[in-house]
Each structure stands twice: as C-alpha cells, then as structure tokens.
Length: 489
Image 1 (cartoon, helix red, strand yellow):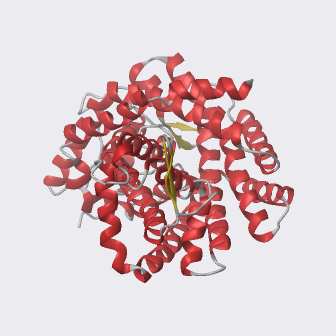
Image 2 (cartoon, one colour):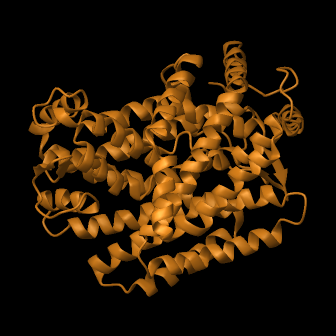
Image 3 (cartoon, helix red, strand yellow):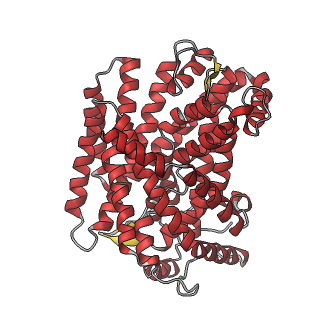
C-alpha cells in the first residue's frame, strides 16, 4: 500500500514537467549569465585550489569535494546503466546537455547559498531553506524544503547507499550485511561527530582518489578498444536525434532517461549541494558558485562518461523498447551495475565484480558523508533559534541506525521515498532560484567588474542593494583588515 502511494506520488513529482523545468532552468540561467560555464572555465579551475579554511568555514576545494561526495554516487554506475538500458546510447548525449546547462543552474543556487549564509554555533550554515527565508521571507516554504531534505537525507538515502554497499560486498567478498552495516555506521560516527571540519577533511582525501582511480581504469579499457571510440561517439550522437536505424524509435526515451538520470547524478537544480556551497570560506559568493558549476562537469562529463564509454565500447548492455528488447547483448541481465561489471570483465577477466564492488563502496560511502552534513544543516535551520546541539545529536543517531537498517533489507521502498524527497526539493528549489536569479546575476557582474579592475573580489551586499546578507559585512571587514584575499595572478 505504502509502496503504491509513493510510486503514484513519484509519478507526479518526477513527471516530464520536472524534466522540462530543469532543462529550461539550465538554458535560462546560461543565457542570463552569458554562458558563464564557458567564459569562466579557466577561472573555475583557478578558484578550485585557492583559498583556505577557517574556524567557521571550509576551503573552496573542501566544499567542492563535499559536494562531489554526494554528486558522485551509485548513480554514476547504476544510473548511467539505467539510462542506456531504457533510453539507448543517445541518452548519454542528453546527460551531457543537462550537465552543460546544469552548470549554470549550479552556479545560481550555490551563489545564492553563499550570499544568504548565516553563522550558527560558530559555523557557516546555509542552503536553499536559508535563502528562501532570508531573501523571499516565506518561512513555511523554507521549512517545507528543510523537512523534505531531512526526510531524504536522514531516513531514506542512507538506507539506499548502505544497501548498495552491503549487496556488492556480499556478492563479491561474502561479507554478511550486518557486518557491513555496523562497520560503516561505526566509521561514519567517527566522521560526523567530528563536525564539518572532519567531514570536509575526509571528503578532501577520498573523493579525488576515488574519481581518479575510476577514470583511469575506464581510460585503460577505452584505450584497449581505441579503434571503436569514433563509432561509439557516432552511435551516441545518431541515437540522440533518432538518426540511428536501431534506436530511432526511442528518441523520446533517450531524452527523458538522459535528463532524469543526469538530474539524479549531478543534482543541479535540486538544491542538495547548496549546503556544501554555503560552508565555504570565500571573499565573494561568485567564487563558490563557479567552483560548484565545475563540479557538474566532473560528475557527468568525466565520471558518468567513463562509465558510459566502458559499457558502450565493450557492448555490455541491453536496451528495452516499448515492444520488447531492442538490443540484448547480455541475456537476462537487468540494467544496473552488472553492465559495468561485464564491461570490466571483458577487459580484465575476474576483476569486474571486485572492481565495481570497491567503486560502489567508495561512491556510496562518500555520499553518506555528504548527506549527513546536508541533513544536519537543515536540522540546524529548523532549530536555529533554540539549542541546535540536541536536535543535531538526535539526527545523527537516527542517521546511524538507518545505515545499519539499510544494510539488512531491500532498498526498493527507500529508493522510492528518497526519490520523492529529492523531487520535492527540486520543485521547491527551482521555483525559488527562478525568483532570486537576478541576485546571482548581479553578484556575477560584480565579480567580473572587480576582476577586470585587477582586484581580488570582495563582496559588499549593501553596495549592490542586496538585503538579508548582513553576515557579509563582518566577512568583508575581516578580509579587508587582515588582507586575506588570494593572489589574483
């Protein structure tokens, strides 16, 4: 009964309307920022490694890796396979399109999170709930986002991630799920009870290693089949526009599955990574907005593409059509991690299952780190006028219990309920950033003008007529007084 209700609601929340809204948002924000994702590509890379952490916030790079912890997850393996399995190779092109446009959306939502961040218990906190209340003044709207976030991050997403780890480790190494669940919960307790500084340090160490190792193996497999690369790219492009004889009849599915799985993977527009963006210690909000825009490229154009090319270049996939199977290279194999396993096995016999299990472990584990922080940031929002320590402690305990519980049972309902929470957040966040987009555009122009004058930009909200960003008056003075700005060269 519950599963049917959740499924029905997901059908509404994750309808084609949300797909269209995400695409329109990316296009609109790209045009309004004059395609900042292209113009400022070099600047994004420069800013990734600039800046340092403080007692109140984390560095730009730590905020980037924290956001990537959530973005680079099981969706980069299972989600890509599902996109190919139900949308054909052309779905990958539409994932690329969403990533390109979504970078502008990520800039807008992350910049707004920085503009309207606040300080709670000596730490920078912020995100969609915070900027909805401070900029729009609609408290019930902000609370609705916070509740949806806590529900998804604290009660459903942990089960999904732990279950993915437990199943893969049991299949590959015969490790009992209870052992996996308790072990992960114990490690996570050491991390999350250490606060944002420890969470950021762990993400900073694991995420680059995780992504680079995965991409390197994918490159090895691609190079082993280098002669097929041009044909694979041709297959993706012709399938995306219905020009391929085999996949011409499912171009609608290619667009739908490509965009939906792109949203699931890079999360641009869902408001999920805004909490990480707000935690960064920077002298100007646009800096973290540009860094978070680049995270979309890393997630989709690098990690997701690595998975897609491994699968397509080795032919390790099936494609479902409305009337039955269009392609069945792997009889009886469902779209999911097995596609990637078979792809790796084709190049390195006996390695596929172990490699995917290890990759899933790191992808899911780092996601667990990020979502714990995201959930508690929204708990802090709801209880910020009281003592936040007790509610956050309770959230952490429930979160850890959910991790253990998730390892012991099927995650199907948890997936569905998590999707519902993410979808609700997406609608609430997208509407809010449309309403506040002009603030992000104004902030970008200010950043560009200061850079053009040879300055390292410092944000002055009063100068731009931006209300509700009072914390920045204190931040600005600290940068000016202590000469904390980075070298512009």
